[in-house]
Length: 181
Length: 181
Image (cartoon, rainbow over all chains, first blue to last red; front, side, top):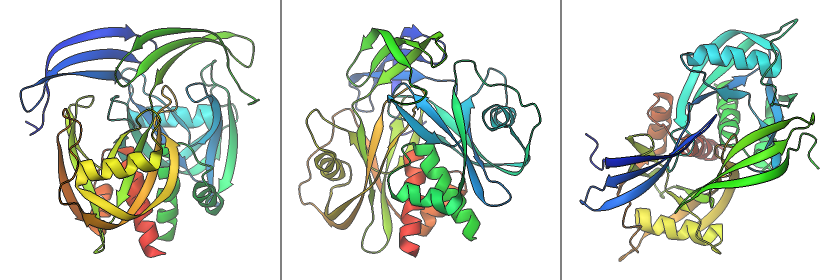
């Protein structure tokens, strides 16, 4: 058992939607006192660090309604029920970028907002990229624009504060470190 | 206007809690079709990369109810209404680690889960650390344990998959790169 574990005594589901579910848990804290936890349940996601043979990072520009702005991000997408992260990763790479990859390597797995959400991202590096002739289309409510950015330029954009997404910021530093080893 | 902007025609607030607010927006997509967006509103947060004079990263271990596990993270905390990120950062550093810092430098600002949440983290590097005699206490429902980990060990932990939090994974690579420049 985790030392600071919080024991749930009651769970109330407030909302069960297409992407997220909101639950309020009544918990008992390690000191015996009661507290409430607002918890967002999410199916999890994958993200990719696709690097072309000539050292460019393949990224997508996408409007994010939650933030009211367009963000430059590495390709990513939700896990579908029963789908392995590797399968989701190859599917999202094709749908969002039109690329297939010769090599897909797990990089790491991390939670994005552990204070209130269980969303976990499985991150993969994708190399040996090849354009697919007739790639599968993505979700019909998703509009993305493809960009291929030399890695050193992506690092400069991060240093200039132009990368506003956490998984993408990590991906750029990870790719930069990999390239230098 | 953003090219792929989604225009809101109606917002329904489902839940307004202590930390998050859940809203469902009816939007018009760039192609004129309607869609629903599930949006979690969050006040925003700060996170710190505190590095001791002898090259250790100051981290905290904390049980995260959303994930049902203890995570090793850099210190972080929610913005309070009207509080600047710099003030929040100094307060959280003191409350979670008992340190004050001589130097606080902005590193970057990023969204953690742009697909469904507006949470934005302001990340700072904290150096010139000094232990405070009687540090302010943190939130009464927060139990954290302090760890000071040599930076190269933190990098190894990341490579071994032991860092399960996105902001912390980024912070470790950022500190590693800074130390090598």
